[in-house]
Image 1 (cartoon, rainbow over the protein chains, first blue to last red):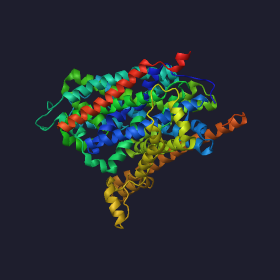
Image 2 (image 1 turned 135 degrees about the horizontal axis):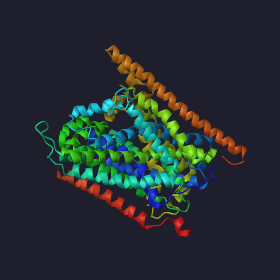
Image 3 (image 1 turned 120 degrees about the vertical axis):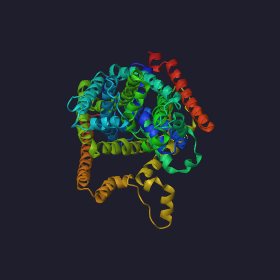
Image 4 (image 1 turned 45 degrees about the vertical axis):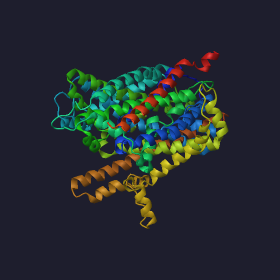
Length: 556
Length: 38
């Protein structure tokens, strides 16, 4: 248990750091794509409902769990959970709150390094005169380790290492001197850059139409995003996507919020701070996030193109090309602003991912701040190398699926049960409202106890039994007509069995393609093995820490 | 853009921006209890 108590430097710093933890690449890249893929305007209502009945309750649960654990000197999920229930199971379940961060940081820092590199390319006007295809190919060349876009060999690896070094160095400067200072600089800049690009997206209109794309219209993109389609509210697929987005965007179910909140003074408010950080994230996502990628892309390439091509790659493969329409100076500025905002969104989140491991090692093994920060860097580098070198073999996606998707839902479901049902809602409510600088609406007591866990269970079951093509109505009628429930290859059950890739191998006719897919299957299984080893390794450390505490006569 | 889309966008963005601004203003205005008692 830690004797080296550290606190946030200021209340604003804490809120900005928490908001920075939540605001990530997903706010600008995942949210608009999810909205487009789930019926545009139909997505917004389930999204906001999910925020109110799942997002806000989870924020309050995690902030209060963190502050409660911090009172006894614990800053990581395993021992924070232990404070809520002494059964051994919870300590080991809390390992997810460290493991998820290590695994997500491994691939997240890689994306962050792309944004660093693209800032430099934007300043250097690399994309000047390139066609859309050339810009897209530039990205493929960049992530292909064997090629170089700057003349520096292994540049993707070098940028990744640089990015990780920067993260580690900031973490080694401590909470107030490193993380908080970065958030105080990064968050205002992010909002400034975002506002500039959002105004461009909002005012672009039809000025980007060309003979090649005569229907290009930014407002058509906005119309598609915001035109409500109330019939889609009955589609579980849209609700699952909306709830999933809330997870990603708020960074709940990871253990980072617990860790940050554990450094809050026990007398201080968490209710207002949590709400402020949560709503700030929503502002960045709903207001800025919806006004950049989709309207700008629709403004130059048309809505049909956006519907067909909406995806994560647009940020790197399309946006630099579109900025070139704005003239040399504005194009360079827009590139720096766009990739700069993505970089700040990324680094404020990846720094948060470092703190649970550091908190754990400092609390339970009395490691110094420097030692715990650099050990985080070393683990992430080791875990991250396969995602860099084997990006084209699905390793990146495998990390994202298990650590960045499944683990979040499981962790959040478990913590909501632990908080509301095992610790008890009476004590839990006292924790949320203790020192509160706002009146917490009393109906949230009911929501936290009943609605949030049921909602989370629905999300979890939905991902385990996801039907073919997300067609829930079709799956139910198929079940009742005796034809069974056909699972989608994206469902958890099929993912465990690698059904999708095995199907692809079976259907492959080209020997080269078949060999590539077989290699991919091998590397995917390898990635799972590596992730599992890390999880078991942290479990072992928890075991050792408990043993040490028992020997020292402290209660574990 | 259709009228419903404009209304939906302005309403949602207005609500989100207002909540964000109000809550952050409240954070700025209310000093933490630990410093109040120090």
